[in-house]
Image 1: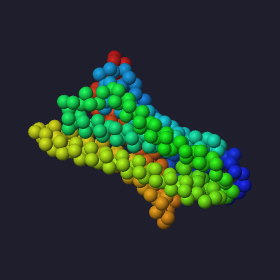
Image 2: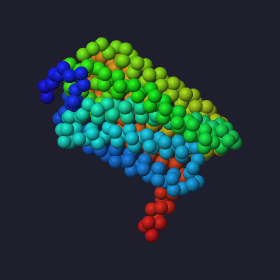
Image 3: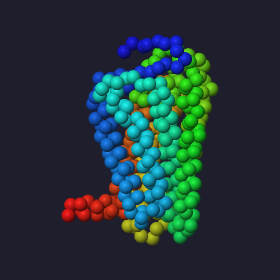
Image 4: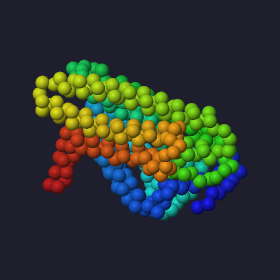
Length: 314
């Protein structure tokens, strides 16, 4: 597809290229992406429905899990349907305002995802390291405040992104070499110096992600220390298995997100298709894995779902 030049300050539409070099595989790549999206939607909706219906699940862990599920639903829905239209229907056009809206949801809700991972790590730390005071430390009012802080942080720091992009003049090409409207990919199309804008975005993303990752690592270090001190070997292995699955999901999120962020700054030699594919992974895989790791592996949720299925089968 040849580049289309324009001198308009705000183009009417952008053209999403997809994954450069893998255009011939778009239809096949869309199959696992669609499958992960369906699992993410069904899994997260199920978690929300179960926690809402069962009052015994109105505990800090499950309330934070509901917040994470809502974040996953918004994050995956803001990217996957549009991406599948590109892969299967070759719908490359995306309206400028729709692109800005998608950009806002992707970056703000990715930050919220990181924040809720941290909140859940804090909850697990208190529950395991100070179980006697868990209910008094993490009251419903404090959980609400933590949720509001996470949401306000995501909106506050990334609300300027679409505003900054809208003010830039575009006189190069309308083609975005990506599967969605990522901030850095759009900014590169501007025909003015965007150094300050780029530094702001990378700095905010790096600082927030690094701080959350370090605090989560510290929380799980204390959790693991307490787990290894448990008198029962069986209880230790059970807690270790639960923590291990949580850590794996968190590592997938932060490793792929970090790779995407730092590739913009330092990875000039990283092939474009590798960068873009991994940038898709950190938006698709966590929403797919979270319901499995935090939902299916959680005994109370699993038992409630099995009970409902048995009632309907009878």
